[in-house]
Image (cartoon, rainbow, N blue to C red; front, side, top):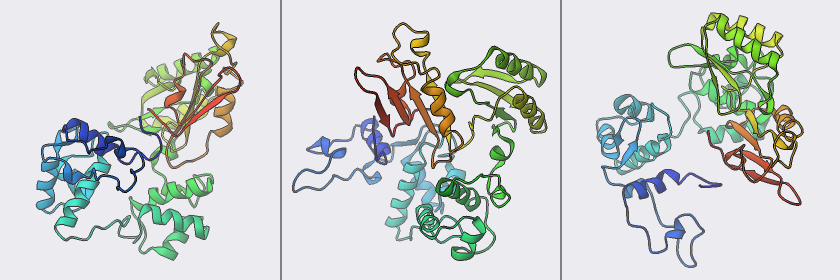
Length: 341
């Protein structure tokens, strides 16, 4: 498990998968450099052409290089040619590294611009928004961009603005930047239908709520599943049915669980000392539910998940959440900066 800067994960994984010989001091790959020595290079140049970059579609480094030599000089072009990065998307950082390394070898300038409308990277745009106090896409476009924007820069800037200022994202000036997920409070799936996941703070749900969710699922012929986030997911909803589905859910006391957003998703909890003989915290209500309700709706650069365990048995798996909390003997402990799922 890597905590903190995990940018080297893809390269470290390739060292293992391809049985590449480690440096004299292997710990220098993840620890600060030894006195008088620099950190050893573990870049993509050391990977053999047979190294698998995309496991979803079995795309090797050699396949990517062949596509680059054919003229695919952007990540989008590589996706179209090789399908690398079009599955789960976890290999995109490594695909980008291979692309940049090969372009540099060929003497081709590496362009990190977000798109044709902004001659800046995502990180540079974030600093501009933050330092200059820019609050809208139009203001940013007027000061630092050109044209009218596109399907790349609009949602990206929308996410940056939400992370910086956390304004209501469906304000008139922000709505055009959001995709259909935020507008319909649901997550579009690969078949064009939507999944609806109402919030169940801390995994709590009343008998009346269960009955309401079941009735709605049956009325709209939805597939139901209890998710790993201790919520009930409704899958297969048609876009035209979403307003009525949400009307009925709201009447039953539910709200969106932000399962589609870069925001707090949930706070996973165990039943705590209220019901469990091992539990030492009453987090069923005092910890998990309050924690989730306190931070719900706050937009972040990436999705967040909380975990609150009532004892060392870790039923809520708090150690693999963005923020985790548990009760040792004298004072509570907190873990940060990890996420699984």
